[in-house]
Image (cartoon, rainbow, N blue to C red; front, side):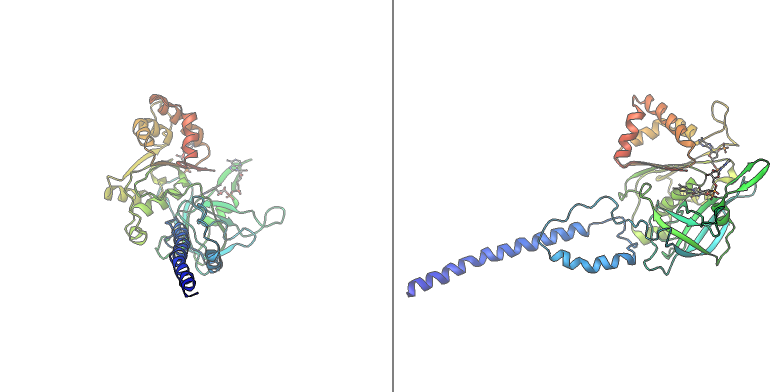
Length: 371
Ligand code: FAD
Ligand code: A2P
């Protein structure tokens, strides 16, 4: 009897390492899932909205569930989208509205900043996103105006680095019809706002124009007019000293901005970009196409696609590097011209642009937003 009791006790003890091993495996699995979930992502800096709080609170219950590896997140899964829908917009307050043009420029383009603090959930966005603006008043049918989209021209930290503002770069739409000047509804509304005015804002929207996470990515930017808005946000993120202090994302790649404007006085944020170029000559190139002051080699207006052709060899050398992204923003009309220039440039390298472009797009390296 005594013998068999000893046997039972010894048998029981023999199971202890197995049980410990079993618990160790569960723990390891759980920690691995946690590492995946807390991996670096686009939002890890500051932009987790209050809206995310309930989901966070619920997380422990999920974590306690059977130890399954967390499914891989879609790229940019954490980027906020449609926090505020057009039917229930956020109300921002104008803090600044000033001309982004210099003396002698054509038209009206304004840099407008809104205070977006105090939302529940917070109105948070990242570089490359857009927002919707609902102009005050009603349309011809007595209905509220439909929202118009505008690219956000500030970084997530805002122009004041406090993380509670959003800036836009807006051209007032004006055209002649039957001898009358027609003013665009929303762009005119925005351009005429004064500090203190309340504005209905929806969004943020869009994941097409986001920057890659890699600090050594190369960024080619092709902008016409207000298409510079997202590029301004990228360049501030890359080269503005207070930004760099805030986010610790130390851009080490090559950035190349091609900017199209009708006149020198229409070059938006030109002084800032010249300053960045002087400070970071190894990292930033800035090439301008001033359509009504410069001519292309056929004697026509100088457009950014002409500049692309002039630098075709270097651009394609950059594109061969898988870390190179291309961003295109501004006039819809520039797309065929850019395509044509890229086709010629690619052919000179023995490449077929019609095959290459979809590949770049699929790889998430070709980003276009035109309007
Ligand atoms: P509306 O009153 O809506 O008038 C526009 C309409 O006028 C057109 O649909 C067309 O029917 C007519 N029209 C326009 N031009 C002519 C013409 N020459 N002759 C006859 N009819 C004409 N704009 C910016 O300024 N900055 C930005 O950063 C910006 N970002 C954008 C981002 C995205 C993703 C998109 C889709 C658009 C963006 N826009 C931007 C454009 C913006 O959304 C509006 O379309 C623009 O401001 C005009 O709106 P509106 O209400 O003033 O004009
Ligand atoms: P232009 O108007 O001289 O023909 P903005 O929005 O400030 O007017 O700037 C837009 C810039 O894009 C202008 O220089 C304009 O030239 C230029 N542009 C106009 N059409 C095209 C096009 N199809 N491709 C490239 N650039 C264009």
